[in-house]
Image (cartoon, rainbow, N blue to C red; front, side):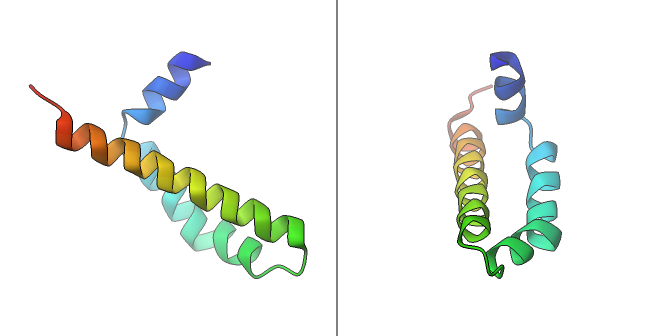
Length: 65
């Protein structure tokens, strides 16, 4: 499992695919839902995407060839 997480943390295209899915389909449905649990789940997914994006940006700025 750790290798999958490491692989995902260092690749840009899975992040872009997940971000587009969230923005296009998942996020608006969850955040505008009437259920409190659905709204919290949507916000939690947004927080995970933000953390993933931060990891990618940090790696991009500190990566040395």
